[in-house]
Length: 248
Image: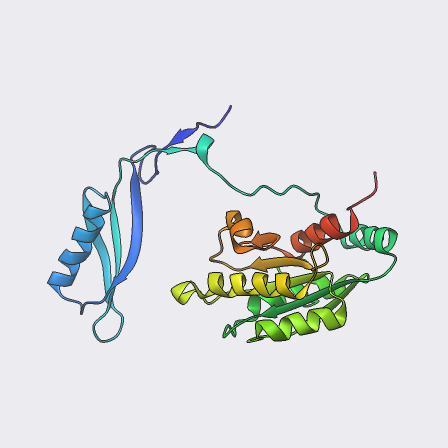
């Protein structure tokens, strides 16, 4: 049985259009604030819009959860996503591909750039302990991994990448206030374009929970990974792009 291409949100019954929305308003928790939350939700298309939860979030702020019905339909045939276009490899397969194609270790340099001090993402991909039951890139014998940690400036990252002869540079960005992750990534891409001759710069890969995977070209990088990405996915991509994957 094929899935429908036109769908509406599901709440209590199929196709009833019920959704739950949460947000914060810069208002103290009062009846007026709850009315403002309901009005905002109504302007967003919820009808009826019911405030089902409200909690003060410090002086002058209130967090709301609103429940209501929307009439919108989603056409899945028009949805654009980045599909994985390479096979997932085991560590043994990845190591074999690197040995065969490069005849040396593949060098990966990773960091959190700018003022971002959240290393959970980059550590999950690079550190041997890994993430989601998968070992990190340090586990791969044919990968040379250098994790520079947090709050690394872009010039420093470029310098270390050149010194190490990096094949790939991995950057994690979690802080998104005022689109900091986008500004930092564009700065990264521009710096590497300036520092390397055409066709010689390392593969640039960025990741974080707020990135849109469709934005790689706009940001000037080779790949964007979103939330839930595992070390095996990243390793397989690097091998696919830099070592030609697994021989037929």
